[in-house]
Structure formats: structure tokens, C-alpha cells
Image (cartoon, rainbow, N blue to C red; front, side, top):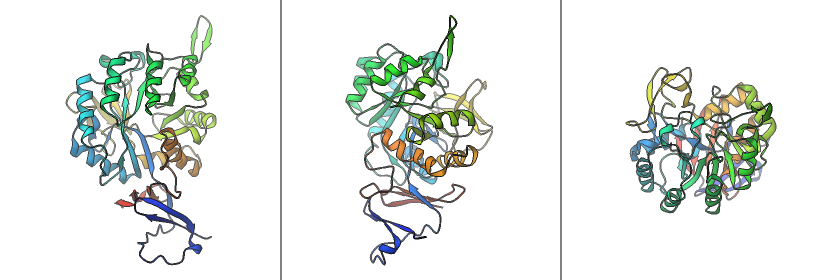
Length: 378
């Protein structure tokens, strides 16, 4: 079987051709995948931190270390995710991002910020602090959008007063509106879709399901997100947040074209079992404990984010959930790129950014390349 070559010039892919058509390439450095898999780099849409760092810590060195850590697991593009917090704290974190956005680092590419909250329903707060949750405030979110152009996505509970108006405001400015921590009915979700919501944050988690009112059954947010054609759903693929039957339900209904794999990882990703750590700012955040492969609130009432690395998601979906590898790779590359309207990422094609990952049958990462630069080698 004839192999293929990906020809990279500068930061972009110049061509993808059968090896037999190329011959020698004088002046080019050759990287031999040696029979391993080669794919576009993984795109992480939802993560709070990794290897001891949380983005709410607001530490420049920590962010740079985190970007290097993501690359170890095949991630080439990352959207750092915040949490619900006092306005002053959130503003301070975004001010910190302002000084770091737009530069190239020795790791995954910092694509812009994903705001998770604070416009959520307290009845579905999960690990988000209910003390900071509220309905959308036009003056407030307008201020943030104008001040911080690197905000690329903002999650909202669509049943709250003013939520649909906020989604329309964001959409007009190229910012993705996500559905999250919501107690909405399916009808409200389908109405929200018409107002510009396009992403469902960690489907099933922090979402209402079927309810019964006066004998009548009503679909919840989960059902609404599953049947809304234009909504891409996130699935946390750590093998713990979701059982196999819920993963397969989403897979059969949405297909790989509308599922984006996410870790929703917190600082505990890459840390040992039985470690104590904090979700959010290390000084003011929520105390958690890492046990049984996941982060818990200390009272064990709810998960507090996953500790999965991205290559673990791929491994779980292939080996645990028995989903074909090409479909899983689409959920890690092409689908998240389309969900964020990225025109030059998520595939190995001419003119696309040279974001490339090489991995083996066990999804161990051998090499990660970001915009033509090798940033990790095992």
C-alpha cells in the first residue's frame, strides 16, 4: 500500500500526496511516522486546567506551562475555560489573558477564551458556585465583549431572562453562544437554537432531562440539544462522567459531525490519585479531591471536572465505547473546528495550518506539531 506524505512549508500544509508521486525532496526535513497514525491536531474546546494549573489562577508562567502540557497529549489548539466568579475576579483573569493572547508559545495554540458562566441556573449549578450565578446583564456582557476581543465563546442557560437576546448579541459579533448549566425544557432549547445558540456544553452534565408535570411528560435540555440540528454537543470522554449507553445515544442521534470531544479537565489532570486540589482560583476556588479517576467535590455530591488528558478521550471512545477511530478523530478535529468556525484547522489539507499529531495503536502521542513547529516528542 502506497504511503502518503504531508508537505509542510512554513506554518501551513503545502500538499498531501502519495509518496510515489514525490520522490526526493531536497531541502526538506523528513519526519517518518514509521507506521503510526497521523492526524490533524486535536482541538480542545473546554478545559479549565492541567497538571496543577487552573486558568483562574491568572499566572502567565502557569498558562505557558499548561500549553506545553496540552501538546504532550496531542492538543494543538486550546480554548482556556473560566468559571463563574465575582466580576472583579473574572475581569482580572481576562486582563491577564490580554497580555498573552496573540503570541506563539512552545506548546498548543491559545485560540481565545471560553467563558463558562456566570449566567446559569442555580438549580443546575454542579461545581459552579451558586453565589455568583445570575441572569444576563446587558451592560455587563457588552462591557466584557468590547474590552476583550479574544472572547470566542460564552455559555448561558437559555431559559434565563435576557439569554436569547444575549445569544443574538454574541452571534452578531462572531462569538459562539453555548448552552450550559440549564434547567430548560426541550421547547426552550429549540427556541434558543433560533436565537443563535450552537454548542451544548458537556451534554447530560448540568442539564435537565425528561420531567413530568401534571401527568404530562416534557423533554428537557438534553432532549432538546439532541434533536436540534444545528447544535454541536460536547461529550466528556473520560469514561466516568458518561456511561456507554448515553455516549451511544448521542452518537447515534448526532453522529460524529455534531459531537466534539472535550476533557472539561481541571488542574488535577495529570496529577496522582487521592490528591487534594482546587477547582478555580487556587486561593478562592472550590476544594476537590481526586479519587477513582475523577475530581469530586469534597462531600462527593457531584463531580468537579475531569482529570482526563485528551489522548485518553480518544482511547476511551475507541477501546471502551467501540466507536471507529476515524469517527473519533473527526470528533477531536473536524467537528470542533467547524463548531468554532475555524477555516484553516481540523484537517490535513493544502492551505490548512500544519497542526499534526502522530500516535500509536494505544493512542500514545509520539509527536505533536503546531503550525509546522515540533513542540513535543516522546
